[in-house]
Amino acid sequence: MTRRAFTIVEVSIALLILTLLIYSVTNLLMSSGRQYVHQEESVMCTVEASNLISILRKDFEQCIASGKATDSFLVAKSAISFKDEVLRFSVAGKNSSSFMQYIFESQNKVIRRQNEGQDIPLAKGLITYFFAALQILGDDNVIRSYPCDPEKETPDPPFPAKPIKAVRVWIKIFMTLEGKGTGKIPVKQKYVFRVFPQRLNRQLQSIWYVRD
Amino acid sequence: MKRTDCGVSMVEIMVSILIFGFCLLPVFELISRSNQTVHVTQDEIKAFSLSAELIDQISCMPFDAIPVMNEYPLKNSDNGSQLYENKIATKLILSELPDGYVRFLTIETVSPRMKLIKAKIEWGTNPRHQQSFQSILEWTP
Image (cartoon, rainbow over all chains, first blue to last red):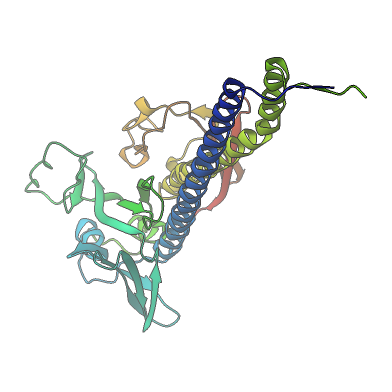
C-alpha cells in the first residue's frame, strides 16, 4: 500500500488559492451589496424627483394670474414668485382662485406643498437644494428672470422706458436630490427643468384679458 | 490491497477555478443588468422631462403661430431660434440634450381649431431607446 500525504507546499498553495477565492467572492458580495444600496437610493431619488416634477407640472397647469395689474408683464410677474425658499403662485379653484405654496425646508430636506389647508410633504429627507426662477419672454425678445437665473452669467438688460408685453412665461426649477447616505457611494442627482403654465400663458395671450 | 492516494493536481485545481469562475458569471451579469436598469430609469425620466417641456412650451405659443412640421430635429443649437420667422412668440427655449440624445418635434393640424403636438426623444445605442409624448392643442380666443 502506497499512501502519499500532501506536502506542506501543496497544502500552502491550496490554502493560498482558497484564500484568494474566498477574498474575491467576499469582495464581490460586498461590492454587490454596496451597489444594491446605491441603486436602491438612486431609484428612490429618481422616483421622488419624477413624482415632484409631475406634481409641479400638474399644479402649474392650473396657475392663473389673479392680480389687478393692467399690463401683461406685471400680470405675469405677479402670478408666480420665489422668495425665501418659497415658491408661491395662484391657482384656479372650484369657486375662486387660491395660493399654492411649495416651501423648501433645507434642514428637513423636504418640500411642503400647501394649498387650501392641505400640507403634503414631498421628497422627504432627499431634497438638498431647491431654487425657482420666474422667466418672462418679452416682446423685445429678451428673457428676464425673477430672481436671477443662477446659470446665466450676464445680468438681465435694464427695463426699457416703454412697457413690455409678456409673450411667454415659465418657471425654471433647479433641484438636487441626495440619498439618505446609508451606502458608501453617495447618491446625488441634479435636475434642471422648465415648467410652462398653459392657463397663465393663454390668459396673457387672450384678447379678453390683457388690457395693454 | 493497493491504494493510491494522490493529491489534486494543479491542472485539476485550475479547471475547478475555471468552473467556479463560470458559475460566477451570472452573478456579474445580474449586477450589471440591475445597473443598466437603474440607468434606463434615470434616462427615461430625463427623456420624459425633455419631451414634456417641449410639448408644454409649444402649447403655450399662440395657436395661429404654431407651424406644421414633421419629425423636425431640434438640436441644442436651436435654442433661442424661432419656429416661425419673425414671431417672437415662437421662440424656442430648449434644455440642453445630454450626449447621445436626439429630440424631434412633429406638429399636425387635426382640424382648423385643433393641433396635435408630438415630441420624441431618442437615446442610447444597442438598444436604441425612444420615448414619445403627445398632446392636443385647442384654439382659445
